Structures are given as C-alpha cells and as structure tokens.
Image (cartoon, rainbow, N blue to C red):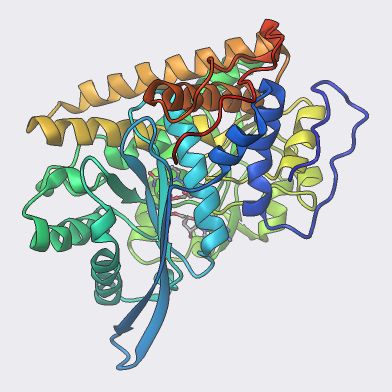
Length: 456
Ligand code: NAD
C-alpha cells in the first residue's frame, strides 16, 4: 500500500509528490508507516486497515425550496476495541466515503493516544449545509438519524459535532433517537446544556489547541508574548483557538473562513470578529483588516499556524509558502504526509491532529460520563480534566519523540497503534504477544506471524 518512509532526520529526502490520491487516501500512510516501524505483522495491519462497519445510504428530503433533494449519508465505524465508537458528523458538500473512512480511523488513533475509552467513527452528509436554512438542516439531521439509529447507542456509537454541525444539530439528533428509544442524553455529545450537555464542550477543541500551542512553544523555546498567529477556518475550533491563543499573548495577524481571508499586522481582536460574524457580517468586511486571498494568508509572516477547516490544506503545493515555526492542527487531516516530511525537514514543530484537536473528544468523554452518572460537573472541573488528560498525552508523545528521534506525529501514531493492538490482544481478537517498538530490541519484530486475527 504505502511506500516506505524516509528516516527521521534524513534531510536530503524530497517529499514524494502523489497527486493521484486524495488527502484522505494519503492520510492512511501515517498509520502504515507507524505499523512498519513497529514491525506489526501483515495480517494485523490488514485487520487494522479494515472498518468494523460501513453505512452508506440515501437521504431524500423535501427542502424549503419545494424540491426533493437526495443526499448521501455515511457512518463509518473503524475500530471499537477500546470502547464504543466515537466521532463527529459533518455536513459538507465534499463529504464522501473516502473522507469518512479516513476520519473514522483518525478517531481510533486519537482516542487511543489520549486514553479515553472509545473507538473511532465518523459520519456525514454531502449537503451544502453552509448555504441551507436552519429548517432544512434540521430535516437532514433527522433523516440522517432515522438511517443510522440502529447502529448507534450510548455503549455502541456516540456522534458529536463537526464541520457545519453544532450543539443544535446534536439536539435534533438526540430528539430523533429518543422517539424510538426514549430520552437518552448519552446518545450524543456536544449537545446543548438544556439537554444535559457539558460545560466547556463548545470551547473544548479550541482550548485543547491552545494548551498544545503552549506546550509546543515551550518545546521550541518560543515566547508567545506577541507571537504572530494565523488561523485558517474561523469556525468553532478556529475561533476558540484564536481567543485562547490571544489570551496566551499571541497576536492574531490573519484569519479566514469559507468567504475569504483577512490580515492586520497590528492584531485582529478575535472576540470582535466573532461578534461581527454572528451579526451576519462577512469576514472580508471586518473593519480595519485588509482582505487578502487564501494563498496570501499562508504566506503571511507568522510564528504560529492553526489550520482549523478542511483536510489536505498543507500539501505539496502550499507547504513551501508556509513560514511559521509551529503548526497546531485544529482541523482533522490538514497536512498530507509529503508536506509533513517537508515541514519536519525545515524544523517546523507540528502538533498532529490526533493530539492537537483531541480536546473535543476528551470533553465529549466528560459529557458522556456525566450523562451515564446523571451528574453535572462544574466548568472548572471539566477544564481541569481536559488540561490533565491532554497534558499527559502531550508529555508521553514528546518523551517518545525525543527518545526515538521521531516527529511528534510519528511518536503519536506509534503509541496509538500499540494501544489499539493491546486492546485487541486483551479481548482475544488478536493472538500473540504484545507489540513492541523495534527500538526496544524486539527481535521478533513485534506481533509474530502466528498471531492471526481471530475475529473482526
Ligand atoms: P465549523 O463548521 O464550526 O468551522 C469550520 C470553519 O472552516 C468555518 O469558519 C468555515 O467557514 C471554514 N472553512 C470552510 N471551508 C474553508 C476554506 N476552504 N478555507 C477557509 N476556511 C474554510 O467546524 P469545526 O467544528 O470548527 O471543525 C473545524 C475542523 O476541526 C474540522 O476539520 C473538524 O473535523 C475539526 N475538529 C472539530 C472538532 C469539534 O469539536 N468541533 C473536534 C476535533 C476536530
């Protein structure tokens, strides 16, 4: 499947250009390379590549324009070895099977890396949600739930918000599931407080990005006071990362959303920009800032880049334009493997998505736990749990990265893959001894050949 990776520190290796595969198809290389380094046996790799279950279905809805529209919905459950499947639901015209598969696997590695008791899933609908009225999005959400309710459940699969879905969307999904199964707050996370959502969930992913930024700055010796920050995708994750990044001392010099990009070297006030957008203003009309092209956004002089929109945006065409010292991946899958190598060769410190944006699933875990216990935690308790869990994951990943001379992403994938294999072994799904990194001198090269997959 994947070609073999260049060795870390091999500065002469050029990133291979692979335009024939989408960013989603290429993102599997991160897993393949980690499995290679760990010496995971072929049939175990094959098992980990497969999805537990894939749903693809039609969503025919009469929208407010009076016409029948037929969209395609997806729910991909990758691996549920460490707990119920967990992952967001995205409403976006580019949503497709390949993207949903890639994002589901990403969730498996993310939940394992940060140690929350979930597996990985992802879903979505290929609708142009950004241009649809609220009542139309509600119809689509309810129709989606009708198609997937049978594979969901608080101990089975628990959706959450993603691009163009929010707390309100989760409220509709909860309501629709409840019609068949009774009122069940733990069926979704990221829902409104009025329906037993958690304090701190809306900000959680952006808060996690800011926590990682702080740790990354410490790791590279960058003072954040006055550090120039650029945020691509000023939505839920991006706007909270910007607000909390500014509280850490950063200056937001560039921001963008689907409508355009802006630049102000003196600093954009993210709170004011949030209010401007909430009142219906376009980002390019934000007073005092200069409208620029999305390409120019990447080329701005800055120290910290936070991608918080779509996948594959840092790729072989854009990577050379980026001039930052730190990338904190708020978005899922923003960096293609070849661009990732180019960043590593240039010494850019990248906090990978499975760590950087895990704040969302960590607080989703807090929300789920509160729902199961029928308790509500104070916001301070939720934020403290987030900081503790993410801080520990960052430290573990950094320690491994230093000990093995791997990038943070390589170290993160290795830890995650090991944990998922350990869970499969503990269940008896896989036979054989625990996988160990080749660096630890495992002469058999990890999971031996006889450790066949018993059942999937
Ligand atoms: P959102 O819908 O709230 O925000 C997405 C933002 O990206 C919007 O501002 C949109 O206008 C902008 N955007 C879309 N296309 C763009 C383009 N071509 N150029 C620039 N901006 C563009 O979604 P979100 O929940 O903030 O999710 C953003 C990213 O974070 C996604 O990759 C998602 O998978 C990831 N993520 C989200 C969460 C979460 O808790 N919401 C958790 C983990 C990861």
